[in-house]
Image 1: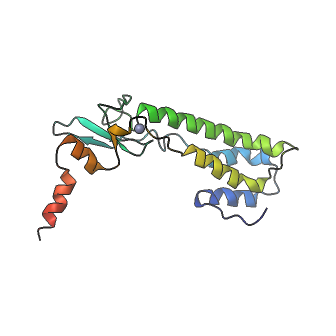
Image 2: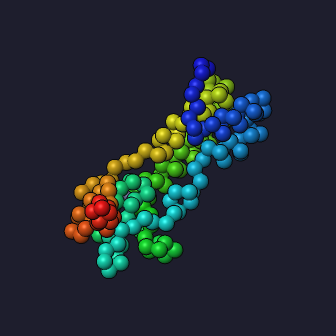
Length: 178
Ligand SMILES: [Zn+2]
């Protein structure tokens, strides 16, 4: 295999593989899988980022999946008692895609061992970071929301949609009087 530039996210994995080159894959696979798979809670389990109106009602949430501000009156969110907002940190649609993409990535990562052990396969241990990078790319794809008209790229647009001034924008304006 020719010289491969290792992505930052896979440097540890690559080093580990280089150090364990002579070992049987099955003896280090548990460690490998742990290094390669996404750990739930790092993402989906977090606190939601919200915009509230003057009455403290949650108006919009920054969707952890779609990476956009979504109006909770128009886009469905699951309830979560342990969250300060009472709602999930991503919309139902995004949550379903997030779960599906993570499950597929986990399955694909687990399948690497089978590919390595298959005598017909040309996959070698050096190929793992490249395969894993492909899996990671697939896992983090963002499928666009089916309701783009109810989501916004910036906080300012949410406040504009609410018909109230963005408190952050006012702060900046006041400071600029000097
Ligand atoms: Zn969403």
